[in-house]
Image 1 (cartoon, rainbow, N blue to C red):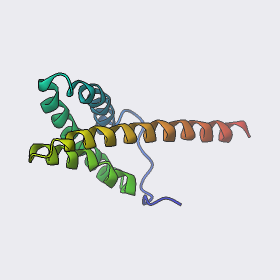
Image 2: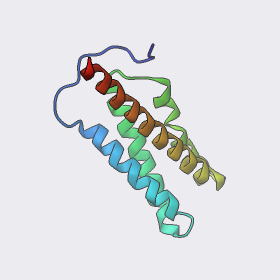
Image 3: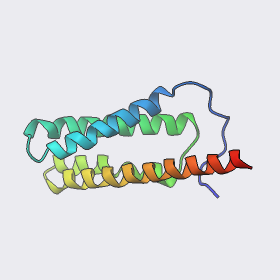
Image 4: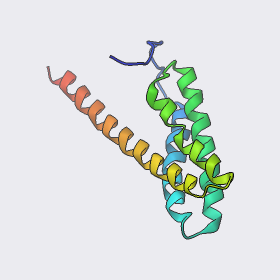
Length: 122
């Protein structure tokens, strides 16, 4: 059973909010790694985390897909806020949470593809 409410079927085509969220997330993974050696990368990482969170909230609202995972996805933003108020480990929290989210979505994507393959086989 899912926490998501059942909404209308998604329309065909590219969901720009989802695409933005994905691209920004992958770029943030790269910049998050660079923020430990390049001071300029920290500000860009923080900006990307805010853009990623905003796009996640938007498409969660648009598709009525408010699941626990979407709320947990705000942990990187909380880490960035903690980093900017003086707790430098907040940026590391944000980066670690981003990796956890990325791995989670890759696993869910693979599971989804396997389920689709099972459905088309029989």
